[in-house]
Image 1 (cartoon, rainbow, N blue to C red):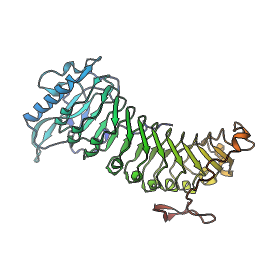
Image 2: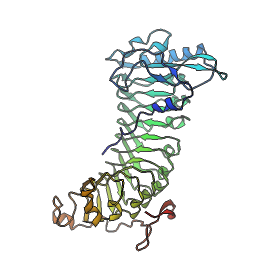
Image 3: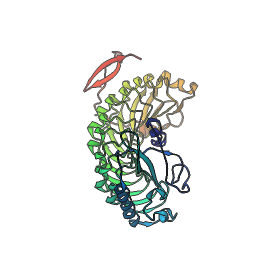
Image 4: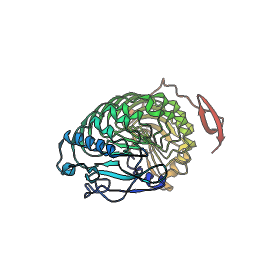
Length: 404
């Protein structure tokens, strides 16, 4: 399951947090429907207090350099990129800037929205001239190559969307140095190599890295991230899910379709705000941790297509907010009493292709005789028969907060 479209566009946040909105002065007819290129609406400009004519000259030079690097423009988007009035260019949006006492201080380029323009080409280093840019949306084009290191100079940038292009090479480390960035979307490209540890130390609220070619193990500090959504699905990530995940206040995290191994850590149960957890299509083993019963707000749990075993416990099936529970294609050997009651709660429940006696659509007996992860040692906190206390994991300890 991929919930990458579950969030509202982050640029809407600017409308609510700004004290004074600036009207778009860019023109043009929309391309590709909602989220595409167009005029009309409200954009918020960030950046410096006193822009000058030289700022607009630099913006002109940046856009002309970029235009020269665009090799195919089937929709004719850049035909309007002529002359010094960059605010009239399609897909380029300007806003009125004000000085420190509120007087008009000229126009600045505050946003570039070229979503669904089907442009082919590369990004150029001169984009760093757009120092007042707060939004750069390039979803669904054919840009290729890497991301220029000079992008780090876009100090006003809050949203960067490079998704659904043909970018390649290692993770674009320059984005880690953009101080005000809160939304990073580079999904559906061909980025490869290790995911940098420093990514999870940044103040990002959304991280979309899915559908690339990232490999290696998950950084151990992933639990440091303040993000509300992290999507790492459909990559080539190996190793264990870090225990440090218990520190996070995340709402959605997706690990599906990677090459993860080992146990599901107890720390996952300490995400008090978690609503969606998808670890399907990996090679995880062992039993489900008892701490999952602490996920009082969880709506979607997907453990399908792993090598999990044991009895599916009441602690999981009794979660009150649960809307969908998928454990298909594992090696579970039984259902607890509360799991059998899920059918009467209108909860989507798929337990097919397991090893549950008396149930339809289960694995053949020879498949169930194998012991998966027999030598695997999974940390279990606390040990039965002690009751489970839901709280925050610190290292290998629990600070109790409540008992469900």
